[in-house]
Length: 271
Ligand SMILES: [Zn+2]
Image (cartoon, rainbow, N blue to C red):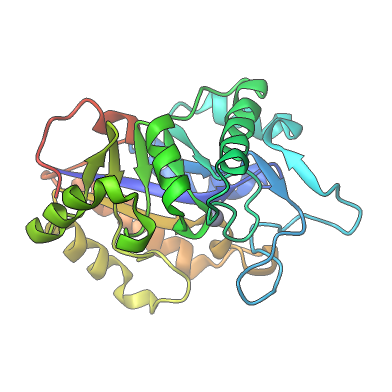
């Protein structure tokens, strides 16, 4: 059996419920769980690397407060609670650019703690998986994430961003060619890049997803809800590709789609 985890990043207090509903109802209807990496206290002035406003700020007007906690959108919180096919992961704190690329232990701890507290204050369950904005960790933040969360999901791991005490383990993982590994009791997952991206040729998306899943025991598929709604309007062609993936995942007898928390129950070889 192969395991697939769909990770959708950047849900926040400004995310319209309709967007998630349009994208993920076909998954939920098929019993395919969807993992949403949720920003606990979204910064309404967050910028991308190139200085443009983040795409997940679709509905942030000029009068929006500087930060909005996830509990500030009761409609969204209720929607997430009512649909138990969603599993929520903690996606940083405010999604400031590279906010976890810091070796200031106190600051990193504060961001992680405050983020988790905002989940709980909103009535959401305590997140057990951590996703850093842009998958960017420092040595300090990676170690703290592993100590606090049973699962860390990232793109890849670089030697210079890994605590020295983990180096032998990391080198062993590299020698094995393993995508996933463990440290501090936490499961550290890698993903093969954003295959479900609006920037990729539409026609090749499903094929690439299939090939990637076939080559691995555990695959994390990363996507971003807001990419399906450029300027707030649905991109029907791209949404169709996502739904074709749902159809494929449902019908492949060798694939099981799972939430991140289920990984903790499996003792399977992760590679
Ligand atoms: Zn993000």
